[in-house]
Image 1 (tube, rainbow, N blue to C red):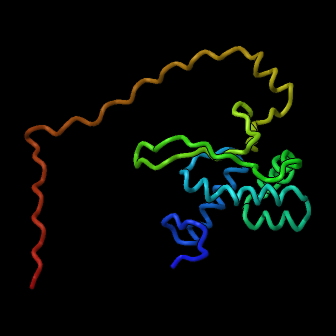
Image 2 (cartoon, rainbow, N blue to C red):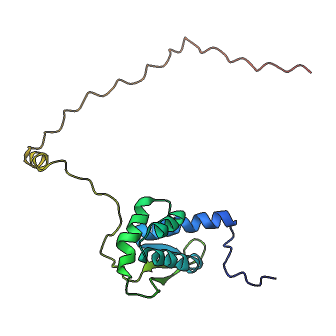
Image 3 (tube, rainbow, N blue to C red):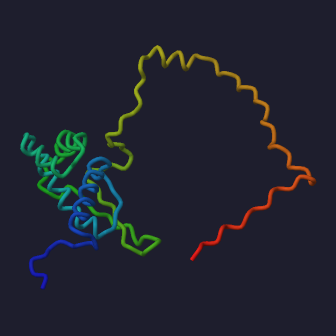
Length: 180
């Protein structure tokens, strides 16, 4: 009997399931929108919302609790400084699930899990953009005349010519027989 067993197993061991959900929570915090199967999205939703609720109260204790689930310190920082403050006035319901239809390969129902205030055009991921070292270098690069293409190098010579007909290759020896 399965009395009191609320969560789905998803065909995985408990350690695999926990690792998968931790990775998806990290991706959700980083990208603020993920595409996954509908069943996984339904299981992931309460876990993400608990993380956002933790982030609403910024203390050392809640940061350590969040760090137990989210391995990357950069993502914990984003949760507490960017995501959770947006939901200070909202009592739960931080995420939405949008059904996409069946996946082509195995007909599994797909869904998008995203934060309620997610805007499609805004890029809020925490990836670092390349920095310019100094404005002088940037102007020098822009002012520099484009260099003419390099002259092509002569092609390498072809492989050595084949042996003449008079020179025959050595015949291969048959493998030695094993003694019984």
